[in-house]
Length: 231
Image (cartoon, rainbow, N blue to C red; front, side, top):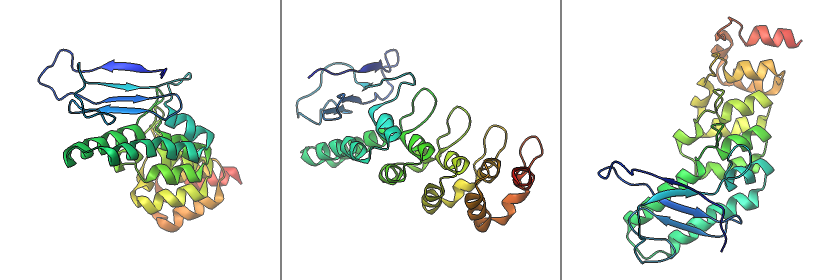
């Protein structure tokens, strides 16, 4: 099968450092090989050569297939990519330790970032694709959900700034602490929502924490100032 892939050899000069996994995703998301202990999910035979992380990327931002599916709002494709990993986990006859390694690799796939620092969850939240956000959340780690892009926005913050109320509610159910995230300019999600004139998001965030209204950006402006400017 022809595959488009990018190979990143790791630990070439540090033999005592734990080696990373090998991952191959086909352009259709239907093939997956993973090795983290000289094994492959599609074969019980040892995998020769140094372990490395291999991922298919495309487009101007080096998006993975999961990024692209999230950008399209394609829930079926998102589930297919993740289900391939789950199916391989079910079929493997190796130890629970190996299954745990595969689960870790699945998490790495879900939390992978493109060259803008965006996870698939971030992209789905940015575009307002609620179903995709819900699907990806099932496999996201707390750390992955909190990852920020190059501008200092995480998935929750970008959803608030775009006015995607349903996604904001969903992410708050997962982690209420996401309200405390700030950008490089010290803008809170409340400030970003107020700047965009997203009244429903502003009201929701204030209902959860009225004290947020007192927090200001680096320029001294808070959500009240910005809401007044929006009229």
